[in-house]
Image (cartoon, rainbow, N blue to C red; front, top):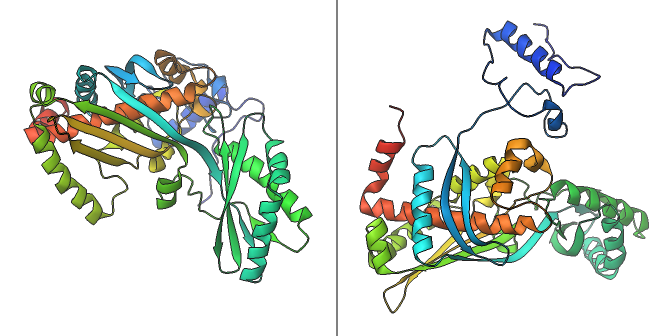
Length: 389
């Protein structure tokens, strides 16, 4: 069977005419008229650099949750959070958790680490050769930094971690990347550094640009411990009265259930011992133009709670690898930009603001779902809001 290529326009493949030609080609081959796919409000030319073989847009419903009260170092005040999803009850659940947070004085959010990695592997004939190379890397770090940073006006090489395996040495380059997520930025910088290393090291050496311990778009224990992206912690203390009035549970009930959930997550080998960080993060990522595949890393989390001596309930969620941006990628597209503007997350320094809002949103979801499971609202809520009637 001969292969039929997708139509392309060599002169202007991101124009409206090229998209229409491809839709007509698909209708001819499948019989499906892509009328809704073809209905979008932005200039298709703006998708250059974001997509290939453009045909239209997937229209994902966007709901709003809030106000979310955040006491961050970059995000401070009330925010109405856009969530793009097709899962009924999700926005309502986050909205309820945000109300609990608001009544409790807001979520305190802290970013404790912020760096992006690329991890080349250098290949030798023996472990001692690899060890000696590692010593040379330590001695030559400033020169390597200069070469890497020459490729970017934003990225800064913070340091290089080393991991020896047999005759090979894995180097994990840590960068700060400003308001960009930075995967492409650090790839370019690290490639330049590796080429310089190969040319200037006094012995024969080969390298592979990624040895896979940066674990791009894959969950990993190393990123849970060492962080990839932003390590963000959101905290709130809720009173017993607030919990009873708004979600119908008590601190003691929540803490007993937490012990069961903790053991279950451990037994399952889960990347997150909480309820559902991926739900809120994915919905926010779609709305604000993030690379949604980064949810594979960003959703990992560590939920920690305590019943305090006065009977209040302390909650915290630590997200060790939130990969989020307000510059580059899909953040400049029309609808995504509007959602970022809604949150006030444009301009220099806004990626940390968005990360704090994201973590507080996740905390709202933890509060709502954990309470719903105990109070019996989980199934009934989805029955009422999550089914097409």
